Length: 78
Image 1 (cartoon, helix red, strand yellow):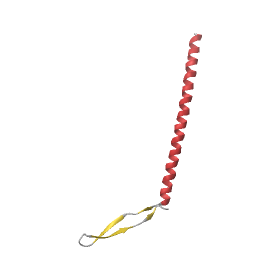
Image 2 (image 1 turned 60 degrees about the vertical axis):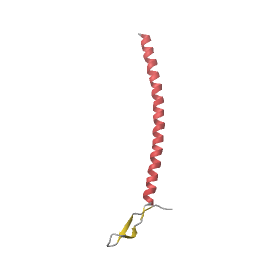
Image 3 (image 1 turned 180 degrees about the vertical axis):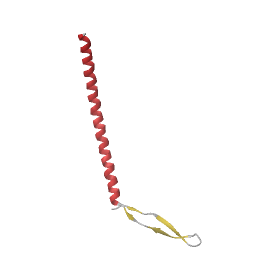
């Protein structure tokens, strides 16, 4: 299987009546394959970003708890 781009244009006679069609085919499989690769890379990157965002959110929660504990300990020393 392969991809083609096929614009089809009518051919009109001198009275403006359509008598035929003209189709010019262009082989575009490499471009379509590249588009698919880009879509797959984008999907992979989006998943990695979501995973990293979740990790950072978890780390942020841990750091907030640690800061609160240190603040509480500091206030207890005063």
